[in-house]
Image (tube, rainbow, N blue to C red; front, side, top):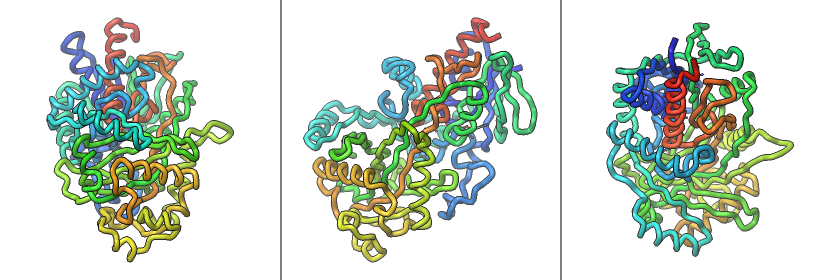
Length: 466
Ligand SMILES: Cc1cc2nc3c(=O)[nH]c(=O)nc-3n(C[C@H](O)[C@H](O)[C@H](O)COP(=O)(O)OP(=O)(O)OC[C@H]3O[C@@H](n4cnc5c(N)ncnc54)[C@H](O)[C@@H]3O)c2cc1C
């Protein structure tokens, strides 16, 4: 019998376990078990990514599964402002989240994250905020720590070495179902059939486990609500075009409301001197970007994403996003790349036209083509309008040297209904992180795990879950 089982060793699960260890110093020691279906961080390897081929569909996707979760191969941008990276503030308030993010950051520093912070200079923020307003853009404050893909892994190794001294960790172990009796959680059943008992269960299965979590919620009578889908393109241009703003703020978070459709559009994941990469989501290939801590490419890339919140009768944003991405895959064998000038002139890009651009594409196997065959008129119009606004802020964005890659898609899980302690209506069953639709970034996922751990520890100490 364990006190707590944590399902998932991504940021939410790892930070929950760190918090249980810290709590044990103050109060009674808890018996904690961490389960994850993926391998240890050192053994994670994605053949598709390494060999630049299409997804070979491993039985368990080690890109998204294993110690470290989906963030392991990520850019390691730790966002320390509460307005970015999820909806946890809806439950615990801005002030509560700001405090938690500070604790998250302290853990990152303790385990070796670089000390440098970006985006915290008030004067620089004010300067760019004013200029953004003059360009019809809203600049969001975004203070972040950038670990880079290379450092993220080392920090996760350090965390694993520490956590494994105090907490039992079983990797390569998939939870099949949550065991509930009389509306009280009793433990979990594994894929192997083994049943493990616990007084509390914290499920943090990430986006890869979101569908499973939703179906478990349905089976257990827990309500879920839909989140939006974000679709758009990855923009790549010479580093110098945006150097002034990226040198000052590193990752400017800009919001825009389109004139034609009044849609909400935003920049996302800005990577100065970074690389564009392909990403595999189940049976579709999408585009993304990352930068190493000591990045050396001559380009900057970032996403422009349009948020769509479907209401009725259609309510399947993930299926919508996947069909758009599939269309791009159908006509290009993967990701399409197009010069912005070709898109504006209503013609496809060809290899020859791409070669005329001074921006050398960092994603080598993207196919020159035409994004207007793929993206709906509404989304394409939104993107072009935002690019024009960005061109006012940092001249040179609308140019024959700007490349657009598509499709970039962000699929968010259904939101699992919980109270403010992240407990569902099943007593002792808690959820956290991206899989529960509460967060969409490393720092908030980690914060949600810590928040749930604190709530669970308190209930266990008061013997409420016995
Ligand atoms: C390419 C990429 C780049 C990114 N870059 C950034 C970035 O720079 N900054 C940022 O803030 N965010 C970034 N993100 C998002 C970030 O990685 C996620 O928000 C974060 O990892 C979510 O944490 P989580 O703990 O909720 O879930 P995850 O990290 O997804 O972890 C969930 C874990 O649960 C396990 N699991 C699932 N189901 C089961 C089951 N049934 N049984 C056992 N285990 C299970 C999985 O194997 C997985 O290891 C990026 C994501 C990707 C994919």
